[in-house]
Amino acid sequence: MLQWVKNNDAIGTVNRGVPCESGLCTLCDSACKGKCETWMSSLKGRKLLYPRNFGQTTSGALLVSSVGVGYHGLRINGYAYGVEGLKAPLTTNPDDCLFTNVDVTTEFGNKEITKCRIPMMTGALGSTFIARNYWESFAVGAALCGIPIVVGENVVGVDPKSVLEKGRIKEAPELDRRVETFFRYYDGYGAMIVQMNVEDTRTGVAEYIIDKYGDKVIIELKWGQGAKNIGGEIQVVEIEYAKFLKDRGYLVDPDPYDPVVEAAYNARALSSFARHSRLGGTDLSSPEQVRQSFMDHVAYLRKLGFKRISLKTGAYDNEALAMAIRFSADAELDLLTIDGSGGGTGMSPWNMMQHWGVPSIALHSKAYEYCKILSDQGIKVPDISFAGGFAREDHLFKALALGAPFSKMVCLGRAPMIPGFLGSNIEGVFKPEKRASLYGHWETLPPAVKDFGKYPEEIFAGWEPVQEKVGKDEMKNIPFGAIAMYAYADKLACGLQQFMAGARKFSLNKISRDDLFTSNRETEEVTGITFMTEVKNEEAIKILKS
Image (cartoon, rainbow, N blue to C red):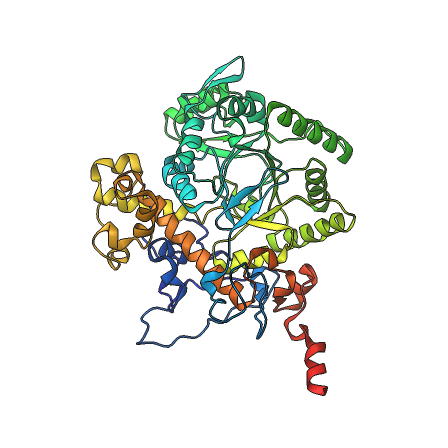
């Protein structure tokens, strides 16, 4: 098995366990005291783009493995001349062609356009308690950064304070909190996306959203995700809550009403229950039936009043991928998120994450191929967001280039959650009276944080930019986790600008697949991206023989 190094001495980062290809630990702990690259970026911001101890050290690149198929098998091209995508009043004068002038804003949508300051969005943050507990940081951070955030599945169903009458939503305080927290700082960039699964559709999430918030919210249909090939799960430890969820119509395993299970729970032999969602599409048996059901559902949502509709699909095989792309195009959807296997933000079965589904690089390569088939027929392709193991600025560039010109966004699942954890832990140290409500784990600052300073203003690179954005008086209401997310996003944006400047692309819509080459033949075969020694080789020979 290909494994990645646990530490990077050049930028001073360390992983607790063996990292994923994304650079995150396989198990990301909200109490972690550091110091993976995403964790450090949340404090340092763009400074983490560079090796540490400048002026006292030299640095060289790690030996990056080129073995095996993956995003690590893609490398970013750079050019010695030219420039594309400059926007007036910029000119080709070198004084204008600075990486800080690269435009990383993007937009997606069919008829209603959604603008974003950075081509990234969060993964679906649904009924997991970690999404609920740190929502203030996630949502405020997304709004300040100008990126879309997704409320995932089952939020209403698991909320003990929600009220259902005859199975339909009447009150949904947790869903309201999530939507309203984002719009508190929304300034026209980014979006609030609310996702629906089988249970959400049955209980009337779409009807509730449109009645209360109108078309401000994007509604998202869900076919699946990359982490698992069954519905979403959470784990609960109280038997009464497990019974509440079963009464709500969920599958709860083991059955909390079973006398044997109750006895085991009371004897402490059983300490938790798993709540599961249902599989979708079980009453359908052919692509034609799937299409009709899908088109009918979209038509119903449009009749309700939704102007923007998206679809999230998982790491299924080629037929399901083709259906997602073609049906989204036919339904004129605004965004299609395609999630490769291996990731997850919640309670996915471990070996299922390891062994089911199509890995991201293969799935995304096929997505490009199928999008191009539609485009060549004159069919408008839905805007695409790739998901599945992304955390760094090189990931953003590679994903956008691999799917160009169809890919407009990159979906990051676990990575943007880390600044929320970290900021909440730090805020709990400075505000011990709020530690419990912040879900902060620390009583004192660990050494890795003290290295940055003693006070929030010096610890967070994002403090002053956020204060400039919201005003000094409003800073008291901004979660530290949101400030940390701002620094992390700024690092990604700056790093992306640098890669784009090197590729001479000053607007995102100029990035192309030609800006990549492969470092091994296996990745070349899967992606269709040319092997590095063959890129522009004919042009090179022509120059040499001229």
